[in-house]
Length: 64
Image (cartoon, rainbow, N blue to C red; front, side, top):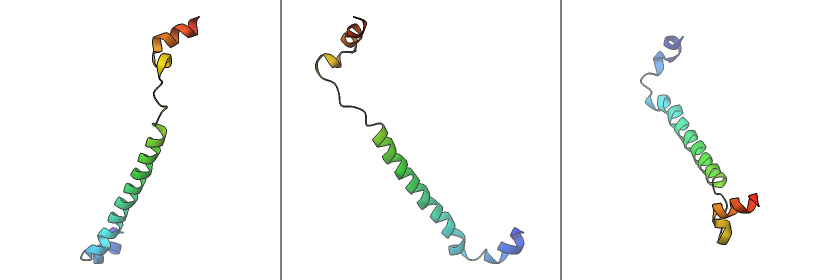
């Protein structure tokens, strides 16, 4: 099957590499979207100030 369909295309380098290049473009787009999602999800809350910043004090308030 591959020999009968692709044997004549072996000398046509642009045809052979166009799909390969397009796959890298799509992969880069997926990576960029994943990076944006990771930034949004991992952003977290701002650092607490005062007594909220001390986890031990916060734990003792919960027990009381």
